Amino acid sequence: MKEAAVTGTNHNAILENRKNLLLTGVTDVESFDERTVSLYTQLGELTVQGRQLHVNGMNLETGEVTIEGDVWALCYGERDKRGPLSLLGKLFR
Image 1 (tube, rainbow, N blue to C red):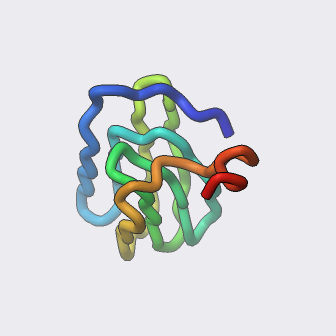
Image 2 (cartoon, rainbow, N blue to C red):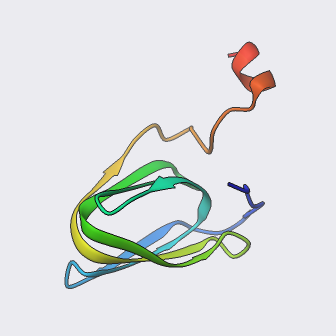
């Protein structure tokens, strides 16, 4: 998926009633299905886990993603990881 240049945007996660999740500061979405949404934010990796998850809105130019479903967990990973490494980045890792 396309990585956007979202600079100066704060990362926020607003969860309403464990059903509606609004994320800001998203730089890339790696993958999503009904149980897991894996993405990258200004503050690193984020995995959303749940049931019947649907990505309703995704605008990587503004860094906003909306997810609906039964949200069970928000799991943050590496803070410094901003997105998938390119082939050149993997060589110099």
